[in-house]
Image (cartoon, rainbow, N blue to C red; front, side):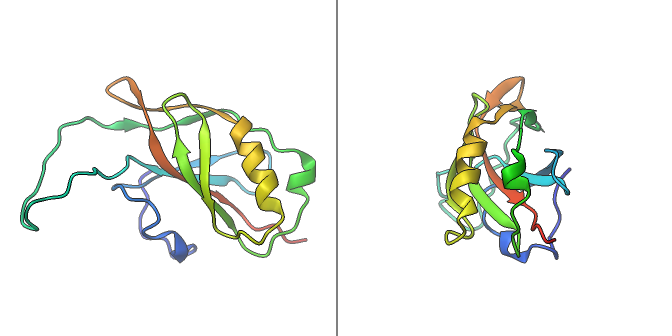
Length: 144
């Protein structure tokens, strides 16, 4: 699903460099689905002029697909006041690499980063070839 402007999580706007941004809903056995927002990273080369437009014919992107996304009960049962956002890359090999977390003071972050490193995805595909994509993994808040 291609994402529109988010009213529920306004802090996510502009965190990913590419466009468009797509959303995959991950049913990981938690109370709510986790969100995986992804995009192809923006090109490194800068335009010579603000009026220059590069039109690419690179083909559409097939979304990544979770193969193994288990979450232990010890993590699901922890309370969090607000959603946690992990930013990183989903490699062409299907591994999630976390580069940054939204709430670095939360003790749950270290457990989550270690957990998602064990997850396995079928990578995003472009023209039937695995590609690396930027991702935001949004973990919903847990209140009891």
